[in-house]
Image 1: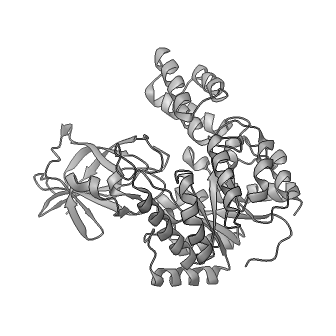
Image 2 (image 1 turned 180 degrees about the vertical axis):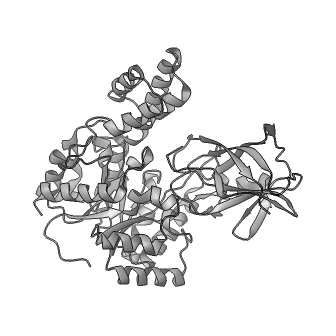
Image 3 (image 1 turned 45 degrees about the vertical axis):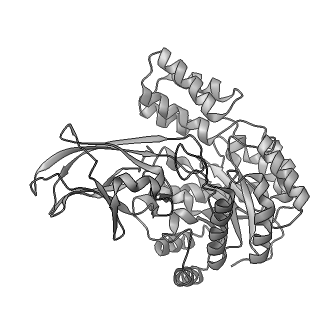
Length: 127
Length: 332
């Protein structure tokens, strides 16, 4: 990744009534359609998180992560965080967790290019 | 504001401030104000998909708001960079021609509505679609320049195919936007230093310099260095840091731009580091810039600092030096 790029968003990790909510930033220099971004892997405290029921929340809308590849006309603005909703995950507010997230990005004007963008961070769960 | 010019003009692309933008240090209005305050305009370029949340379909309301920001700052929105996004589903077929043409039209309409006088587009647009798009650009009265970006240069087959189509269509609405990264004379020392800071060793960097000068596409050369590096025990992270050079810079004759001057409508003054005595570390501006002045170019070269891809120097200071260098060479 470039010096200022990050995949874990500034808003971090929060416990909500719908499960855990993790902020993500797009590791690129411009907005891209969600269809070219893939959540490669997510680990919390060293354990792989099952993403089969995960959802994406962005700009007031939500959709299943599994439908992300179809979102060719929904653009992730480079300045915004998008959120990964994990319905089956819980954590106590105020507790610390080691989060490892890897986003894959395939820039839509460079055929065959797929960048991996791993980042690990210790996050305190917000309410 | 725009003046009737008799020679090349300087300006800046907000892409130079990518680090400041991504870390949320500025909003669109405060970034424009900063550029104006520092006297780095008035001519500017903006990447539609970097600064405008509504891109590719900018609303009338946002366009008005943008025009007000422009009026307040006295800047001149010369170029809007648009994207030829053809591969919207990774690993699958590209989108069909009709959808790609429409994608360009949406961006052209947005750029026009916001007051830009030209757009930057990309070679990912297949050349056979130019006859469909050119009349639309004429109708909207907005020029389109395809960016000749590394590893491309004037002698690249794709550039030649476009040139033949340009001759056939013969319209002032289509042209070139040279990006000088295609004719770098060496890998910037600051980029090598960034790789060193990540732990890359000198023998890996020596091999990088050697492979960088060889023929081949960027990904082939990156593959060659990766293979050599792995065989010689270098860490993947160090190899990855070194490989950046293949994707943003290539080594072709700086004088080769002469072939494109006539249809050049705008320039990306790509650079990595300009010293206090006004010399760029990798690109030979003293050879390149006179070609455009002598060839009668009267458009804008926007300073495009790409050092942000590997370090955190002060982008505003770098742009100031780059513009001062251009004025020194052009005698403006």
